[in-house]
Length: 458
Image 1 (cartoon, rainbow, N blue to C red):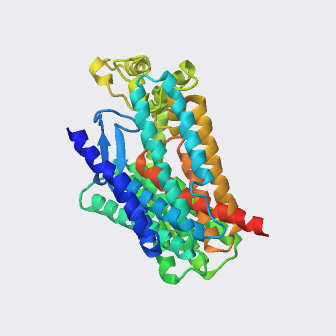
Image 2 (cartoon, rainbow, N blue to C red):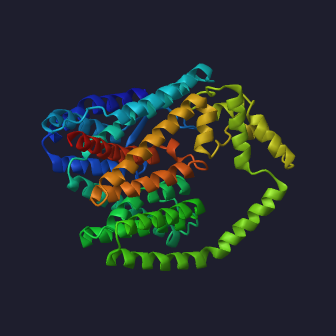
Image 3 (cartoon, rainbow, N blue to C red):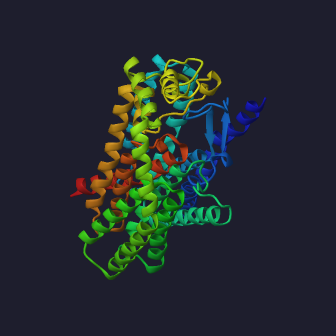
């Protein structure tokens, strides 16, 4: 009965409210900007506030626990309908479904091949439902960008919401007494990675001499807030990624020519790095000592979980089923749970069956893909990721001194960092981080499409 009520809510939203809103938005560009910026903000908010799940399996540990429907997708439908009504007025006319969207859907199709080896095909269809329709966010990003003011509002939103997240993290640390702050996320690592992904493109645009001072201050403050989020999350990987990313963006800015603003920011960044390094040095040394001690006595749990994924890949080259990892590595099936159980036994722990019915998933996004989706899904992932980096790279140089080029350079840096960071964190399997990625790379795909149209007209 509860699912029947949920269906009665989501179906009208997707098939009536979304299209109707799109018709209303068609000739209202400021309203379209507001809707898109709201979508970007929603990647930071609690998903439970705007998501309904049919057939929910609450205790399952996987990509999705049921068939998810989200208000952010309803807004994406509205923007797509609005674009379909006005895109023919543009010259050249952009495609309704861009090539990058088809590439993403092709990746999803390769992931779906794993259904032939799945423990439970229903769980595969849950993932297919969730990850294919989220392509609407990519398409929304593609059609959103038309004018420079669109990019300005997007960047303001990204910087502003990171500032808000930093304020929430400060409140959690100073008033709530939390040591590892998570903001509006369930875990600190996805929050910290989301923060640097959102902030660094804005930080890049803030370094541009021609950016108005008020906007530049907001963008640069957003960059600093991302560093604070990483620091308060105690995520050393995210803090290192932020530091490297900020350094690379400063380097790209110097290639365009020095300025007073760039020099001032560089000095402030250097002073901030010295302060952070001095306050965290003892923590870093303690962590290194702990890692050495642990390495001499036991295999890290992360390695054991990767061993589970390797065993899955050996048994099935197409994977053991999308969204089936949590089934395959836990009891009652037990086959891959035995790897974890043997490790626990080797450390002197008693192996009690009831403790292994919901085992953790591997932290590596790529090994999760290989275990669940095999070589086809992994190949599709690499192809899509490579395409997004290519779009950002070409856009960076095509719009080198324009705002679009500075923004694209920031995106190029954060994409490279995020994809590298995903070797140890599986945040791209989570809705909030993936949603922000697709919104931003949709914008970058539009810039690359316009670059190609410029070239064709020469």
